[in-house]
Image (cartoon, one colour):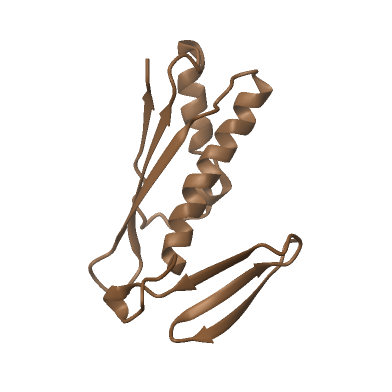
Length: 137
């Protein structure tokens, strides 16, 4: 079990502490709903969680197969659903892997692994989550 402690600081801002490590993350509501936009919004953290989970899951697979993914870049774009209720509508992820890192015969499997990360599997089916993989060969 992992726990986090969140303190609401007023003016749509919160401080979250990862209890076991002491790491702190601050959040602020986005500007379009009256926040200051001074930090990650809670839905930005969901997008970030997806991207880092995809990368971590792929890297763990790669390590077991002696594939070096150093320099891999993951870009995620969050779009909010325009209807009601307010929710995330789409998280578009692009994974870019430096040249020569992944043998051609391992790429399809590596991409499937990216789609199995726990965050991806935990998302509502209402959230579109297209994923693109680019190999810089």
